[in-house]
Amino acid sequence: MVNVIWFGLIVIGVIVAALEGNLQAVNEAAFEGAKEGVTICFGLISILVFWLGMMKIARESGLLETFAKILSPVAHRLFPDVPKDHPAMGYILANMSANLFGLGNAATPMGIKAMEELQKLNPHKEKATPAMITLMALNTSSITLIPTTVIAIRLNYGSSNAVEIVGTTLFATFCSTLIAVMLDRWCRRRYGY
Image (cartoon, rainbow, N blue to C red; front, side, top):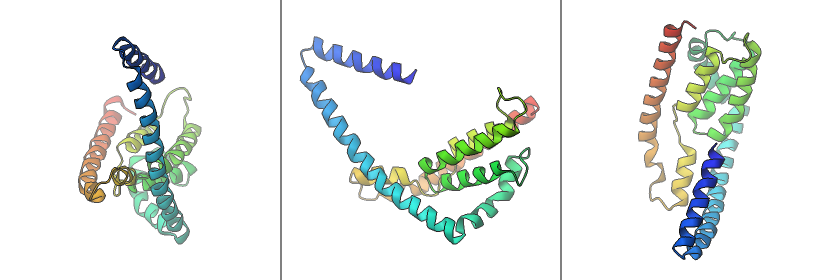
């Protein structure tokens, strides 16, 4: 559906430019947009490689395990229907840890693996379980300590203080996570699952 919307917007833009006799502007915008996209990608690659390297060091040094142990009691309360020693819990904890560090791209594969493991526990395969819904809500609204992707974008655009958004991001993501957890608990009680 999104592809159809994008295609429609592009076609409308080209038609309007043609009607106004300004197809050159479309050409320039296409090349400028492509150039800017590549620049942003390279900036993001550098910051993602840095943080993925930091995550690897944290994992090999045992810091991630310690962090997962700290998060474990919270995760077990959020996912009461997932057994403590099930592989899904490990992926959920890894997903939560990656999201805390603002590594959305690193968190996604762990979230997908967690969903696959949760699907194995699902008695009704065609319907999402409460644990799956909770994971989706937490993954979308997760508290972010270091918004690495946004910092990288701000650096690419020449921000004089790219990390000044850390405090507001932490506050905003704390509020979003709090609301997501409260809604999740309310839905579980309201609909009895």
